[in-house]
Every structure is written in C-alpha cells, then in structure tokens.
Image (tube, rainbow, N blue to C red):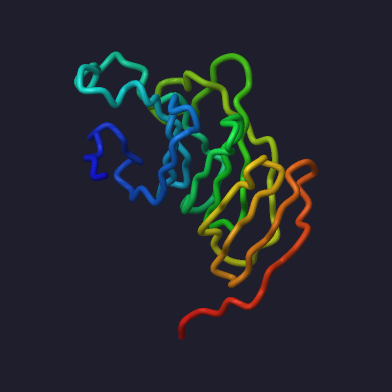
Length: 170
C-alpha cells in the first residue's frame, strides 16, 4: 500500500526515520532526526479531518533521546512504545494518567497525553537501528550498528543474551 504523508506529520524539518502504528490503530508514532519520538492521533488521518487545524493531531512529543531516533516499535498490547537511537540507548515509554508537559521555550503546545520513560536499556556500543517485541511482550530484541543483537527481559530490563556473528559489509 502506498500512502501520502500528511503535511502536518513532521519532525521540525528533520528526517523521519521510523513509523509504527499502535495495535488497535488509535495512535501512530514517528522517530526522527530531531532526537524526538512523536505520538500522533490516528483519527486525524481521515479525509474529513485533514484540514481541521483544531484537531488533536499531535498527542505527545517525547524528548528523552540525545541522538536521532532510528526506530520506534509499539508493544503488541499497545501499552508501551520502545525507541532506539544514535545515543546507543533504548527507551521504553509508558502512558501515565493526566496530560503531559512541554519543554519551556519550545513554542510547542503542552502534550495532550502524558508519556514517561518506564525503562532505559543500555548495552549497545553503536546506534540502535531496529527493535522487535516478542508476541507476549516479555522480550525485546534490539539490533545495532555494533553488529550485535541484544535480547532483553522486559520484566526487569536485564539483557539475557548478546548475539554476535553479524559483520559489516566492508
């Protein structure tokens, strides 16, 4: 399927590197070169809402990475979203009650939804470029430019295995 990106889906003029739709289809997330994960309202994609400026399109901006966000992946149950970045970290965000905040001086409106870091996973020594949840969300696999895959136990955030053997084409 080919779809055209709505003009309002953006990352402050920077590239968008990843997109993932939440199971159930209520939200979608993007990760970009501005070091941010953005959570969008899927209902805003409809033709009738395309020109509705007052619609709640952007639900939250997650500003916790220190490098480009290369990958965003919703957990299968839709409660968590994981993101991998050039900062070598994997952040797992969870939606909390209430509305969110905004960065002082950013000029952006306050977040409609409140998303907070529930877990930070560290162990890669290069950019994290891919993520995949197990069917029951108990395990997260991460791939990196350090030529490894890390397997994470999501009940405690511990890396249970490091798969080596991939090499760069060089």
